[in-house]
Length: 325
Length: 163
Ligand SMILES: [Fe+2]
Image (cartoon, rainbow over all chains, first blue to last red):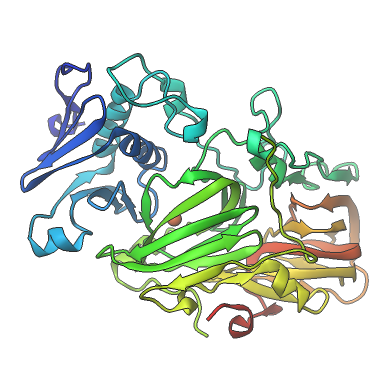
């Protein structure tokens, strides 16, 4: 790692938090806010919003496409390098020519974000948890919550429950969530003939999801070549505005989510999509979306993880809309 | 407070909506699994999701299905009802290597019984590549299948999607 890839931070400020510098960006926090500066501007947002977004960006390794922390700040994944931007996908900033983008090696930005997340997250606050199930992120620095912010990302190779793969969740590590207390916990009845125990496999996905201790954090449960089932449990608001670079699909497995959909480039409103149990919908490749879930719900996010897609996307050859009809 | 988790079913579902501001509802290919199953023929495989070659298929499960096989893994998720799944390890794979999607088998499959699985709502199973499988549903049930677009995939987006 070269000198310019070392995480740069300052001594703690009066509230006890370090500031971080990467390229021409600086990030600071006080008791309530994250403050970001770049050569043509500054921005402030609630540290609550900032930490929840930062947590997803770090845990998902910059995810697919654009992760907008809000209407100003965010990252674009180029799968190896990543853009950190201010105002780039905001029409007013663009018109005023106050937007700013800098490209970094993914590892450099990842390590800087991880150090920031570690320093700025207090012991009482879990950025993955529903706000109803965790403490507040505000105030002077008090301790850290390393185990919460470095949770292992679950990713099955074939399917949860297959011998040797990710296993089902039990009371010992994953108690049933308060909002899913009524979800049936029965497991499938497996009657394998001798010698076929490794391939006669099934599990209760709904029970598995009822025991998730995180929100808005897709994890892989089944893999059909590059087709990935990434279900997640959702409560309150998706902490990022996701600008997917490829089509992604949602299957609402339980309850209801409302999606606010904006143009991916300008941020102008395009639609509101209300999904109820059993609904299936695509998110086109040129929008950004943020979900609102009034009760904890089960959402199946379906992704195409094809390694060919980044090249097609860069060449403008990836489809924007899922089907013509 | 006691919370009620709302799942959909053939007998009780409510479709959501798209409020268009500056867009075309067709861009979202918005359908409902139970509505599609309600109007489907038994064991018909209707695409409700498509991402390049990959699809999600809704299957109305009623009675006993024909035997099928596939060159790659597939994953059924039971959205409503109850099913028994039978698996047979084929002596000779019947789906050509690299072929996408499932194919029907005529008659009984030649191979060793692998076992059977009883699946209820919310249960997801593995259909291992090159096994033969069939389902049995005493009462009408609904499957969502993670698979790849194949010969038997029915696409009727205009009929099922909001526009
Ligand atoms: Fe998304």
